[in-house]
Image (cartoon, rainbow, N blue to C red; front, side, top):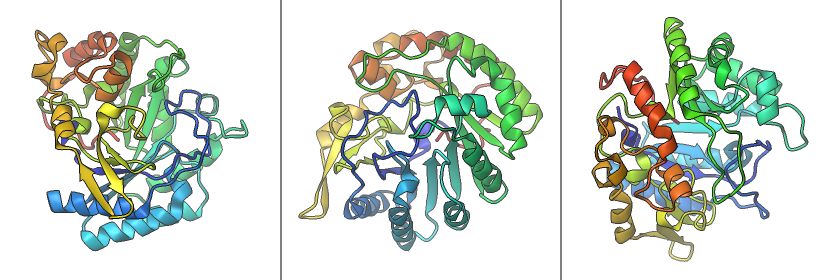
Length: 354
C-alpha cells in the first residue's frame, strides 16, 4: 500500500533524549517540553470522530519512553475510545527492563532506530555522556523480537554503513528481526551544517543487493525511496493527507520533521487552546498542504514513475527548497534506478515505513 494509507495520529511526547545522535535533524532543546496530555486526548478524540478508529503512533523529537507515565495514560485513553486501537512506538531502544515488559503487553508495532553493529551504532548514536548505546539497544531488540507482534528496525544510512547493508541484514537477522527499513542521511532541519556525503545512487545500488539477500532469508528490507512502489498514488506520504502530529508546544503539524510550531510554519494546520481544551484547525492550511500532489509538481511532469514516487519526502523537500511544491532532485536518479529493479504495484509489502 502507498505510505499515505498509514493514517495515524502521532504524538511528540518530549523534546528530551538520552542519546546524542551525530546526525539528529532536530534543534537542541534548551528547555524541557512534554506534550500536554489534555491536548493529546483532544487529538485522539478528533481522530476517532473523523475515522471511527484510533491508530496511535508514539514518537518525538526526543525519546518518547522518557515520558513513560504519559505513554501509559494515553494508551489507556486510546483503548477506552477504541478497544481495538493500534499502538505503534518509534524509539531508540535505549531503555531499562521495565519498559520492554510493558511494551509486550500493550504495543503491537515497535520500531527501534539502530544503525548496525556496535562500531556503527556507537559512532552514530552515542549516549549523552559519549558512551556506547549498542549493548543496551541490542539486548532490548533481541528480547522484544520474540514477543512483540511486529518488531522492526529503522536504520539511518551514512558513509559508515552504506556499503555494509548485507552485513546489516545478517546482524539484525541474528537478533530475530524480520522487518527493516533504511533511510539515507539528510540535512538537519533549518541548518546550513554539512553532513556526511553519501551518494543516493550508491546507496540504491547497495540497497538492491541487500534487499535480494534479505528476501532469501525471509526478511523484509525496505527503503524510504520505495515506500510507494507497492501501489500507485498521487501523494507521497501521510504528511500530505494531512495526518496529525501533535507537538510539545500545542500545535498540530503534518510531518515528523515539523516537530514544533516554529520549524516549518507551512506544515502547521492546528493549534490547541489549553483554556477551552479544544483544537482549532485551519481549513485553508489543510487545503494548501493537500495541494502537494504529484500532478502539481512541475519537476515531476514527465517522470515515468511519478505515481510510484509522488515527489518524494515532503519534509526534506520543504527543508531544502523552501516550498511545499519542491522536490529533492538529487534523489531522483536513485529512485528511478530502484524502480527498474523492484516489481511495482504488487501490493505485497508487509508493513508501513515507520
